[in-house]
Image 1 (cartoon, rainbow, N blue to C red):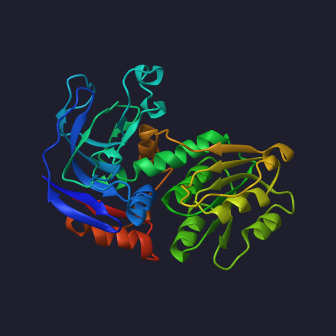
Image 2 (cartoon, rainbow, N blue to C red):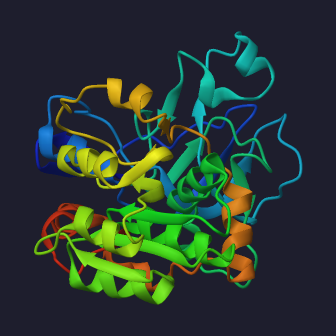
Length: 338
């Protein structure tokens, strides 16, 4: 089968690789659409890690083989999934919670991922980290279920109330999906900050009441105006920018919450004493994927990712796809179609 093998910094090569094997707790999917994640971009830009890997963990496709211990799914089912492989021995693995295993290896990171014609999912765990796609959803929507599930988990973590005033910094697909989910919950006081015009417009359409262009505006000042000087109740930091991390602390009041969703390439220098002095709850949005919950949001219309998929490329043009995700001002979610 054909696969895009990461060949080092800013480079891929299309190769013929062996067809994958099916695991007892897994399935093999014919990949129909696979998204480029920010974590993929980190590997692509830096190199020195991941050479020889097949990346790609945001995907959907058709089930073509099923492991002996997998229940509730049939050949031909359309599905979307996030998976990996744990040690199989620890308490987390024994209870099916592989994402907390200290020896977890994820699809696309040590396990061949979905930038290929077929992908072997080692732990399908139907109904937890995977879901069938209803007929009403396309494969491209299915490929967005993983980032949407991250947004869903982030919102669940903070236990937001309808009376909260919330800021979302960074308007990639996860940030915009957070706005959509908050709005579907009846939360109306939402401020967002981002850098690309189309993303700002989509966030406003999703339900943001105040929109700040981070390239020209001062989001801390805007937050003070938005709350009449009171401060923000909850901040989702989705940009992965050290400057934005500091802004999150500058716009909140005592007793607020900050959920760190973005991935950081650069270290952040800060004094953690502010957590104690301002009674701040700092939350990390880690690995917890409610794929069925994300699919339900899409099916019910509480989230809509169709306009967030801005570009699609065939597998043979994966390098162009990555460059578009990095540099095209109109790009939000770029998909690769094997």
